[in-house]
Structures are given as structure tokens and as C-alpha cells.
Image 1 (tube, rainbow, N blue to C red):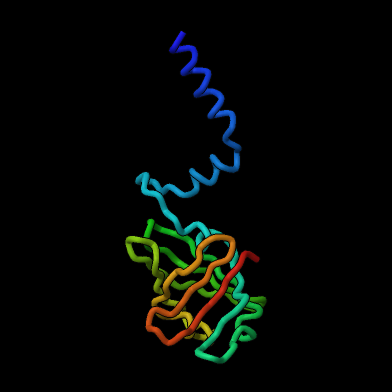
Image 2: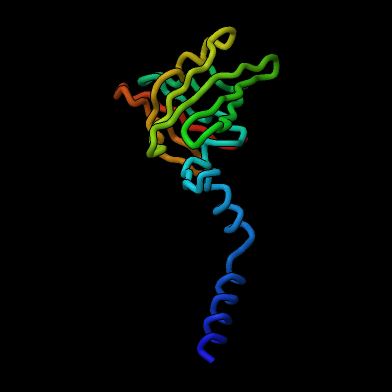
Length: 146
């Protein structure tokens, strides 16, 4: 009787999980079974919705540029960056805690990508991604899904 109650309770719990919950849980685990908490920035097309260089708004410099950060491991990968005319490929790496990202993007011919080539603190990492320059100069970038 006790075993029947336990099995019934387990079935009820499993039925209460939505497909979305299960998909999210799988998407957050890499091949080594390590939870990756960077799904907001990885594997999706992102547009810059706000970029501040100090007190200067430079968002317009990125109006037609799309980013997609593809992982090759839980802490490194490549970045596809493109606009309507051309595409370039760069690299990125994260610290073990997935709280910082460093970008290495080509700046020829997209010279504005030089602004992105630094270490960033990942301040928010969900539907919207907020990056704050790790060097303390106040630079920020906000990205969201395209």
C-alpha cells in the first residue's frame, strides 16, 4: 500500500511538469552534466537594444548587427556576427562561474565591434542580457532576442 502511494505521488509530480520545464532543464545542462546558466546569451540571435560608451549612447552604431554566441564547451565558443551585407566570426570565453564573458571579435570591416572586445560582467542573463564593462568605466550593453 505504501509503495502504491509513493508511485502514485511520483506520477502526479511528473505529470505536473510541463514540456517547457523539461526542455529548459535539458537546455541548461552540457554534455558533462554541468549546469550552464548562460542560456540567455547562448544559441540565439541577439540585437543590441542599448549600448553606452561612458555617458555616450552608441546604440545606433549597432542597429543592423545581429550576434549569436555558439558554445564549443561550457566556457568557450564562437560568435557569429552579421548585418545585411556581411558576416564575421569571432570568439568568446567565460569564467568558470559563467558570470563574466570576454569577446574577441574581428573589427574589419565592422569597426564598431572593437567596443565589444573586452571582459564583461554578465549582470542579467535571461530574455534580456545586460553586460557591464569589467574595467569599471561604466560602459554597458543590453541585448535581447531578435
